[in-house]
Image (cartoon, rainbow, N blue to C red; front, side, top):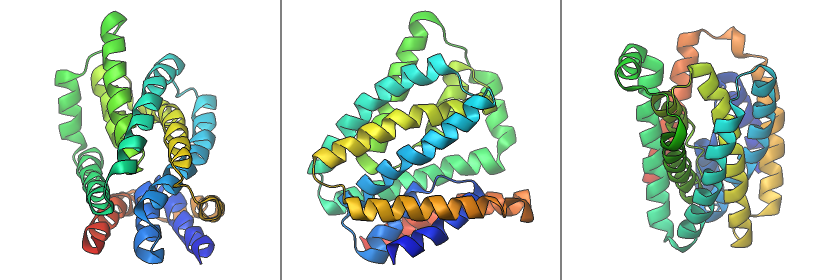
Length: 252
């Protein structure tokens, strides 16, 4: 049932072009009573594979800033490993609440990106900087460590947080921010997933069912994307972390 449910979720994610870690966690915990620590481990580990294919695709399109991605990704690995250790000792209820809160916070940022682009652009015009030298490494340490910790602790990709940080603090264009973010999340998800594995939370069978189902479904869903308007896709994208966060709160 997990496998077939993940195919359906994958179709939705491929259709909307979303990452879906939050909904994966929600489905496993609410729908199949998988322990929250295991659900986080599966979602974060599965993200490694989706980020790998996405990074390769964006690199071929020239949208990945390698130096920035590798630098922040390395610090992100450290943050993710630390976050996974904190998650390991957190009570189930606190971890579920924290994950739900992160999903709802992601919704708020997505709302700005998708529906208030003029305000985001105004913020970028006023405050965006192109950090170099020592300032670049200070910003990279902060961005990588903080977003990596959030990913490791709560099993989410922190995609929108990384993208906005790259635009505001390092002066990247939107296209470069999207591609570079995938490269950054790749080592973060691998580090976090491996840490969960060492802590004994990664269920290999559930992981295989999840990654296979999402891969098959997302491939099929991507074929349907052009059937929907841009406005419909925006509402679908923003609804997914919202639903995931609210369901986790209700379960808790």
